[in-house]
Image: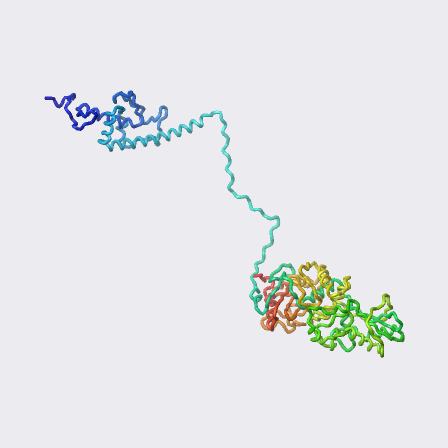
Length: 569
């Protein structure tokens, strides 16, 4: 009978086979297996170095440095020293043999299954210590790198680039503040009675365009064109120039020549719409004095100052002649070729040259003499001459009532004095060129006549407004035009205009009216309610009606009320 207390007893303590021989373990074998289990757990931790060979036993394992010394010469220092988790201290401090044989490895697995919590704690401790060790190695590597080149001179850290944005560029001269304008006539400009509306309003003092609606588009102007004709005449002829009608001796004895010089105001002597006009009576008296009783047998009528056949533009309607608005444009005529010399609008003659000859013969008291057309001989002896009022007066007679006859005559004479031939075709060049002298650029300006009667005239409203700004300034004799313009509600063709709510602008607007069958126009100068001097030009193009003129008055009165606060919006 075996003593159960004998440590060397061979009686099986574990009936379960554990090895390849399937023999039961003795007490000693079980004890050794337990030791192997503990040794394997300890061997997984840092700080334990197995000293035995592959076949050595667990008792040959030698503990390594204490846990506080992770590597030789490098110790964990301070509160950052890595401490193992609770419960792992005993495992770390115990020596661990290394299991190398198959039987030992089986024992390890059995120990893991028998003590799982202990192994989990041990594993956590291993990870914790390994992480701490890696941090220390990283510090060692950094220190080694820094000390690897002790003689290397380390320069100062580069200065970081400034994040401050560069200063914004500032112009040498700051622009003046822009005036915020809030007064609008835009709604008035959309009045359907204005038809196709074009217009421009300018601050006449500064030249700033305050309002524009297709102002750069060249369009017909109607009688507003007479302001361009007047300005051209002042530039070329001058304000004191006078139109002349004279009589010279003919090439044959007893013949005299009546030479027309483009003066439509010459009166037959029975009264005239042109105040201060020269008369045939005065001319005849001078001729009689020169002839000293010589007999006159032939009277030659010379209207060759320009081609007498070039007397009617094809774009004009003949009704303008029969209704009394326009005569045939010849250099020799009396009373503007009116049937009634005292009426502004009176049917015009079909033979203005012949009518002038009859009036002269009557004034001379000649009986039955021969009358023919011809040309005065060069260097002929002068027998008598009469002159019109000066150009400045003629402009004052033309603009208030919109006299077409004076418009055409001044344009033709301007052409002749400018060195051209006085033809209607020459006006397309002569008048724009004359306006350049005022500092204007007549881009797009097309001139067909001097009165504005033709639909083929084309002048941008902006250009007219620019001219009116010059007129408002009064320089270069343009004050003559300003003084002659009709005044709203007071004089000329504006005397009965600007009524009702528009009466607020009466007396403050000086402007030239325009009217043909396809347009009403208005252009001139506004003395605005705020004291600003404005210039403007408005066109209402299309099938005009009785409400078109009042609509023009309304938008003009609106500009008066806005003054320099007029907005283009």
